[in-house]
Image 1 (tube, helix red, strand yellow):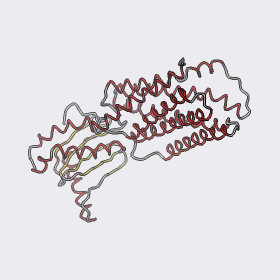
Image 2 (cartoon, helix red, strand yellow):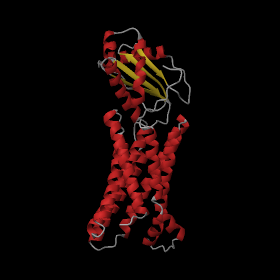
Image 3 (cartoon, one colour):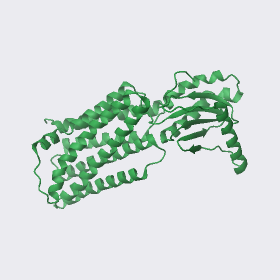
Image 4 (cartoon, one colour):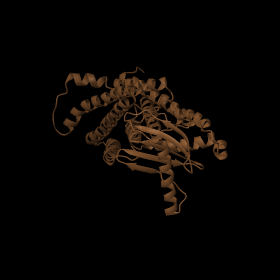
Length: 374
């Protein structure tokens, strides 16, 4: 069977997603570093391509199965976009933006209703044009929405980090975005005709539409290559994180890491540890609970805290995010495991804790440490 541009594009995209799934699974199981939302997104993207390939190879001549697998293929891509959106939200915040989340849920529901209505109409020999309108709008709209959202985030990340990788990821997403914009332009004339507006499609639209799948292929390949260059790189957070500190439960500082940031603030570490200790002591005394406060927030600055059995770890940031909180929880456990004997013996020489810097690259891939050291 001769493969055209569309078939080759699907094969390339599916293979790229498969490679990324394997690499992210290795990160999850070997380095205990996970980003479940992007992993699910990649798995769904791989499955969508796999369904399309199976459909082309075995069900191209079966009207019923071809229709079902076509709808399944596109619907899996829709949920791939949704979980990619979840990943981007987790990069920038602890909570989802209610407006963006509502838009994404609405678009995925629109696509799902449209695609499975196509099956119903076709099986009952009814025109499925209107159902395809819903499915098409629910296909390229969330893709453009999500990838544009990601482009903005990676631009902000580059402004913060000045690293080249966010720009490469940004360019990759732009290529994918262009592919779906072309899909929109191609479908625009079909949608207009469904609603009784007769429009003549220019030849250039037909030509661009015929090569539209090339752009997502290029984008996904760029994404894979950028990731392969540095296998430890998953993401950066596009906001300032000023300081990481580890304290004993009574407030004695054990280890401090100062981080490179855009905005400069001076943090008195002794005062900070004393304040945290005093606040937790008052909290326990008033409420009679042996717990610590998880977060102290003000305009533009937050202190996030996570407690272990014998230590308390905190970060100071301008914006709490999902990944920052999860990483801090992992760090507390890793620090206690690494220095279990030293912590329990109450060692006075804090130099021994300097090797905790080795934990940062794996747990906090988004940290940029000041060159002056710890």
